[in-house]
Image (cartoon, rainbow, N blue to C red; front, side):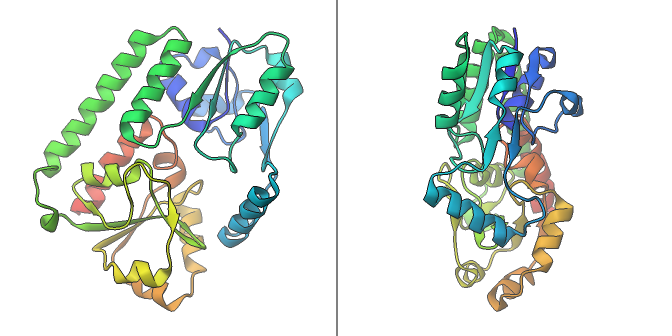
Length: 287
């Protein structure tokens, strides 16, 4: 079976199922596990990686207004790779291969592959997507085993921190920033991760999309801990982006306790490493 992944999280799911050998193509962003870095890249970004957070946000907003893609797909290469399965997504319409792009790719192929679309917004839905991938790859038992193992680890985190039995007033108040210019509060599965790790998310809504809030609003929330986990950026890049923020309300907020988490690796991808994120967040929150 030949599989093309159009999402880093999908690549990590395939790896967790023990099926890396079936991957024949991945995106330009797929970097984990390290073995996938040598696979053919079927996408490339139209955005200059040197752009700042504000410039990237402006470019994405313009692309959305104009209905243009920010990711190019090498359709000819996809055809040559002859996939039996293509794994896409319906979570982000702008910064990843969209459903419309995927439909165009499939219509151009001589043999129609099995298309798996990931669209999780909660931890339970992430596990549902894992099962979908397992089914498409005829690895149902393996998927069930992976999910059982991840679920066990989440239960261990909850038990270690006393969640969900601790009263909300006893939990550290946590704000997770997914972007800095403009400031975005992390949504989707992140509020669940915070609750699992023993904190109270003061701004995010479980299962809801990430939203932008003003620095003044965020500062007024008076969190005990601010976690900077930027979408698509590692810790080093996040530190550089944070140093560029000069807003007075932002600085008042960031004078509180701030911790960094590799958002690109742990919180932005709806895959197995969300459980790693819960374990890391538990250590940060309880520190």
